[in-house]
Length: 211
Image 1 (cartoon, one colour):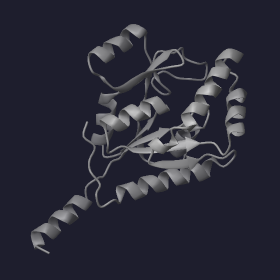
Image 2 (cartoon, rainbow, N blue to C red; image 1 turned 180 degrees about the horizontal axis):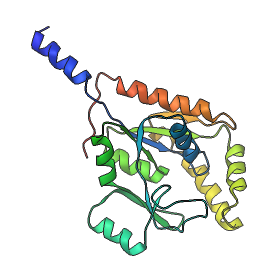
Image 3 (tube, rainbow, N blue to C red; image 1 turned 180 degrees about the vertical axis):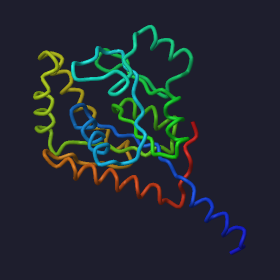
Image 4 (spheres, rainbow, N blue to C red; image 1 turned 90 degrees about the horizontal axis):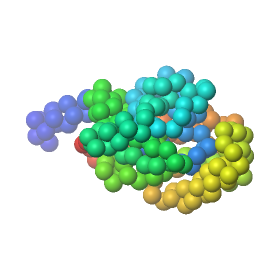
């Protein structure tokens, strides 16, 4: 091997290799819980905060759980091309600000996006280098029970959310990896997500995200 080529390889491997990770799956599967546990464990990653037009719930904080914005502001973000993806989710709009994704990648940290299945499909089309992880329950019964225990919606809305979740489970083949988040075994799911991220950073054909 040419010494200069060898030097280039070592120089490349010494640089940060940030990933754009999509963590998705049906509503109620535990996406928020997995990311919260990653933070508790001190895992270094950049969490992009999603912009949303839905009302803030009592236990949520603006700028922490979501950027809660008006419909007018959200429309402006679409028109100005500020969103990586956006979709209507249960009658409300959600979107990923591009500026935050770029900021996270520039920091050298992995960027983890918590998005619904619709958003994951859009991002995969725009950013083929993204690593898509599908989080799912151990059974449909478990998923339905989780949604019922949340008690944040009326019976009609809950029925619609359950039906949508069943449809979303059928889109598993669109993802790169699947992680089963079993009841009371959150740490196991988190460790599997981290193992996937470690393996992806070690790929010989790793390529930087272009956005």
